[in-house]
Amino acid sequence: MNIDSSNMTDLRLLLNNKEGQNDHHIICSITDRKGTILYANEKFCQISGYLKEELIGANHNIVNSGLHNKDFFKQLWQTVGKGNIWQGEIRNKSKDGSFYWVDTIIFPVFDQQHATQKYFSVRTVINEKKWAEQNREKTIGELQTLLFKISHGIRQPVTQIMGILELLNQHSISLNEMKELINYIHLSTTMLDNYTRELTQHVDFITKQEFSINI
Image (cartoon, rainbow, N blue to C red; front, side):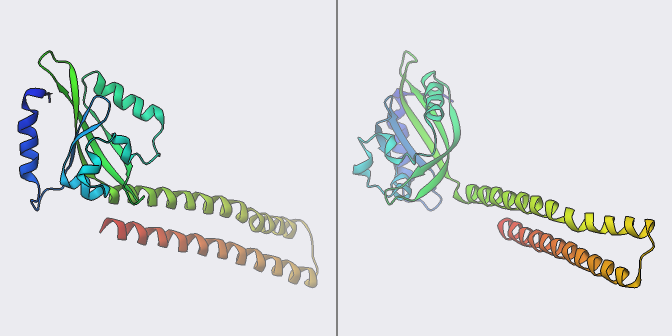
């Protein structure tokens, strides 16, 4: 899709005519080559918390959350600067300091000589998607930590039980020694049972979380 400066007025009129419609949920803006905002629709104002007068004339860095590094934006500007379309997910910051995620598409706007003059951005809010991803990453990390803990914890009772079985196979033992070994087996199996219960509870918790996210 190519946009040239000759139809930018029509594009702005189209966007303005969409303002206030119930199904209008797209964040739109137009910037110059330096990133100065020339146009911002009502949804942009609503999600960012800025008045239109505060956005127009400001650099698009006004909503920079600080999450993405310089290489991220360098690649973005290089892409659109060469006349190509850029698409990606960006975390922005609103005026009150809260963050919001947007799926972003940036289109270069060309003049009659096909030189890039402006940039037209279309964004949709994807907070729920990003929060779900972050929750899954957190859950996976917790599960990995738990599995590491359990895998190391299980070694002790398993080693004890194997040692007891080897001892029983190789030696004649007294009744008192047998009772003592039975106590060791009981302690070891209790430890194993506790670890498996902990793992089961955590897996159940993860399953419920995943179900609540997907419904």
